[in-house]
Length: 489
Ligand code: DQQ
Image 1 (cartoon, rainbow, N blue to C red):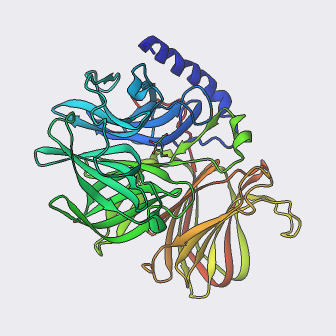
Image 2: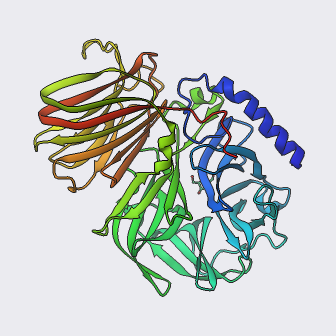
Image 3: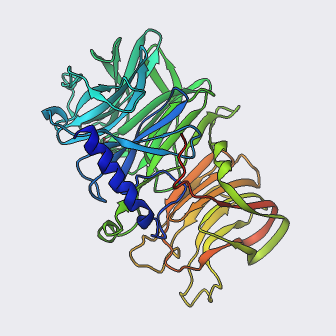
């Protein structure tokens, strides 16, 4: 595809964007392509004062197919400019069936992408000499064409590289047949010639499946973190790394929801480790195709280590520039089984920050995207998405069983442990952006999911208590602006 064709393809998609935005489920302040399909974030990097995010993209259809790398750039992590497609499959055989996931690094001043070419799965290099606007595939491709000898592997893809001393290191997502998921470690001095070292980590099929996709490996605080995508979620191992050996100490899920996959991350000039994931649709696949778009990236979230060596996660503060109209409440109390609708608050693009205090028996939280007025619970006429904190069990869940009257929207309850850190206190940050919901708890856990309310008036927010006592010390709600139409550069 010539540069002119890429520019026209982008212009055509951008022209369709405002029409696609009429879809009430299309997120307005999250990253997604102007039209058609997106999955994994790829090659996230900060370079020359700009943040770049690439992503798996089918620019022709709203479903997964011949993968390209879409490309956006930002100066503030909030407003993104769409650039023409960075990498197109073929014409060479090594990537003619798809440019799959990978990473971006800068080697001796040259921005470089490492990606998986298909089929079969081989690792390839592309470089840019015009500030990451266009990319040239390296003549040595595939730079890793053979799998390590004597290993029977389930797959071989999604390179993630980092600099250590004078060398480059790389992990490739894989699995050892009849054993389990694996991340394979390589070394190079020039990004072109790679030497296989050993598996950085291997787990069992029973624990984390047969194949690990999209490994990320980086230092956080004094520890190292290996994140791998498998069985529909991102699993992370936190541990010690020395002399090219990783010793995991703790395993957890990076996200408690059902819509965070194929993470990718960067280290920025403020020393922050910022991560994105792919939030897939939870809507009937065939019906979704008709909408002309599918797939969205999560908000950028910072991964850090708390002083007690546990993992922290929070949305980047830059997102505050999107805050608009504001409502503030303080010192509200609920007890028994009660629901308090927040007067006047309404929206499908909101940020909610709440400081909750509850006693041991309580299950409490928020009802969002709630139909107003809500008919009686038995008359299935209303919609609501519940964000529920179980104080005694230290769990947080989203109940999407009544999120939509549309039978094509999935029904589920997702969640998990948020740890016993707050002792009856919960700081919640909830981001609603039409069909995507991201809930951050105590800067220690996050839950991402998708909901598709069918009623136009499912916009209100309520506080919930189910037994026990809930005190809301403070609750702030902001309307969140759309990032469409604004260019960052
Ligand atoms: N998506 C890519 C692969 C990766 C998978 C293909 C994870 O490289 O393993 O679109 O979602």
